[in-house]
Amino acid sequence: MNRVFITGASSGLGRALAQQYAASGATLGLLGRREDALRELAASLPGEHRCYAVDVRDRAALHAAAADFIAFCQGRVDVVIASAGISAGTLTEHGEDYDVFKAIVDTNLLATVATFEPFVGAMRAAGAGRLVGIASVAGVRGLPGAGAYSASKSAVVTYCESLRLELAADGIRVVTIAPGYIKTAMTAKNPYSMPFLMEADAFAQRAHAAIERGTSYKVIPWQMGVVAKLMRLLPNAVYDKLACNAPRKPRKAE
Image 1: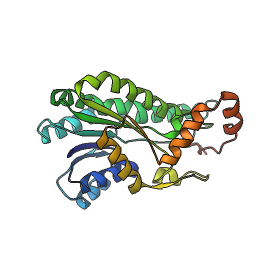
Image 2 (image 1 turned 30 degrees about the horizontal axis):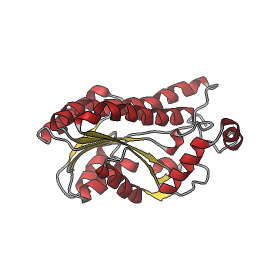
Image 3 (image 1 turned 90 degrees about the vertical axis):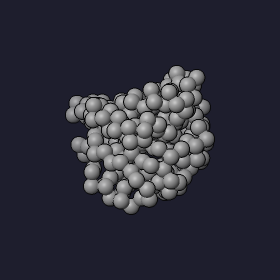
Image 4 (image 1 turned 180 degrees about the vertical axis):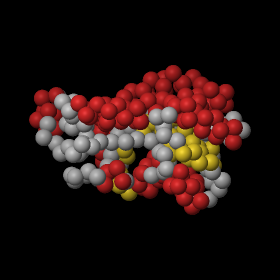
């Protein structure tokens, strides 16, 4: 699988995945908001790659970038990874958080839909392909102070599951990756301990393997997969007692 389109490629998980795929010989479409970071990344990687300085919330620009990469790859793209994501604390009683809430949902959920849209037709015609959504363990249960982020990542899981069923007969695999705590600029802002914190390159290696296998749902690292399963099993009364005083991600207004 050597033609790969990645959003959020200028930093974090997207950058680590780009490095992993380039090391395996892939040709990449690198999309992110910061053109300088994309150019620097592309120059550091082996092979020939395309860079697209685009905000994923701009659906028209995102689709134009996708069309260019599909043409560059002569109509065949093997893997599309919707890795762009943002996070911030949000509280419903603060009206000023509404715009933050919307930005998180637009970036984490709706941009995933917009990223996949242009590639479905080409993958269906080829009878193969991988569409990869990046969810989070934070989407397994609601977390206090993280309503926007938890809701957006939970929605990514169920959206990708729906898409997986819709495209199963076409030979297209839909893969959901749910990271735990991965060492990136996003998690560096967290003012609390992060169990099983993993380096981004180690995450990318494991994610790459899961995508190649076409695994439908994968939590990385595996220890957080155990935590996620336990979280799902807890009755609400028990979960509420354990989680209501959990540390919170800072709001943008703080």
